[in-house]
Length: 286
Image 1 (cartoon, rainbow, N blue to C red):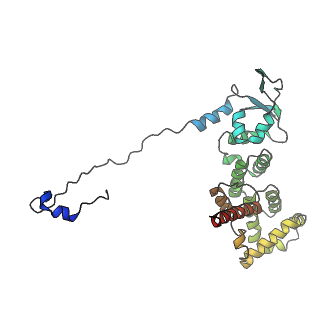
Image 2: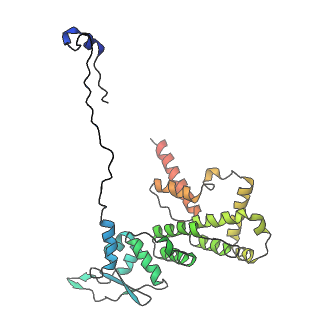
Image 3: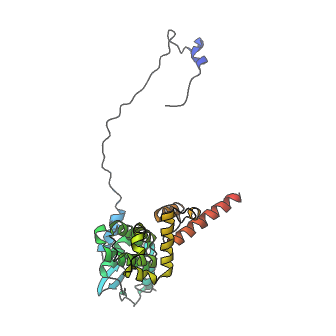
């Protein structure tokens, strides 16, 4: 209701003629609303229309050659969502003094499969990554291509899908751990590490290909031993450093602060600590 009340003294004052035969009459106006009805609301067509540009080569202004197949694109989309790809376009099909640049050859994209490149373009144009298009091979290929073309959002989306669908085995776990470390995929690395830690006793006493591969990376082995020690001994020494936070928690906090969420876990922790330190300094200076 409306927080506006009449004073009792005004009601009881006969000069105001509010009471009727000593009683207070209150008029109540009620509106009965019909049951909620689901109304059709059209969606904003912008996203769908931008995706349709992928099928429209008439309005394209740049072309790529991927595995001997010509793939068209639009510079303004690349400029917004894939700056590195846009940089490849500079000098191609640009107008100079009203005349088109003579350099109209398609831009070669080497070492990226056609299917992978099309998925990247679809993401750049605002589309989602089809989950059924990601398996162990395409997932790793997409992450490498996204890293190379600097499309971090796609890399993170594929990494999350891989973590949900990846089936690890003793034969593959070392390869995935080294891949995740090399490609700065901390969520995937966290997932693989958890798999190893849960089977720590078995793995540590195995004289297998797994241990041989990791022995070639002393720093990874050191990280793994540290993680096993922390989990088995419930070590809380790193609570204040953020190391005990999950990658998902770190990314969420960084996102809330408007900071970059890509990079290794060490990078994410450093970025969050730096932000917290700046905030503390700003508060103390007030």
